[in-house]
Image 1: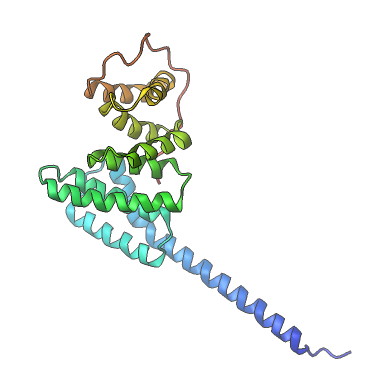
Image 2: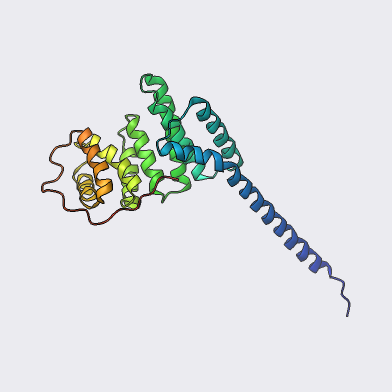
Length: 227
């Protein structure tokens, strides 16, 4: 019996080898992309945790994330990190309104793209809502993003804090449904995180938040930062 492959068999073998090679190259490319992102992501995470950013490192991190965006334009975490980076600099530019607005516009664009790439991520929606809020854009888009974040992440403390910044600053605008949602969050959140939410309430001079005294906390919420 001949061991030589027929022409159709050779075509099939060649196709399988090409597919295998393509998959291997794609895996290597994805792995290299993730490796190159490790440092800028670590830097952004440190800033989220309170480390003060310097302008030189901010610029370098921005450059690295832009390069990552070119390598993989459909990575939602890159878009969220870029959005955070621009928002961070916008918050530091409050004394220059034109610069602040331009930076927030960049931030909002990246957060919008992240919601398109990861539409069920509560962090993507809460980031977008907060950026619009900070840029004084109390639009239908902001409230829609607020509601999506609430839908997908009402038990995530990082999302709760961002929504609290919006809701308690605009308490007379949020409407009864959102007010009730925020009251429920404050009443059920764990003791450690309740203080942070009540600080936001106090900072915004929200009176009569709860009709009755808050009950004892009954457990901790999931603590998770945006990725």
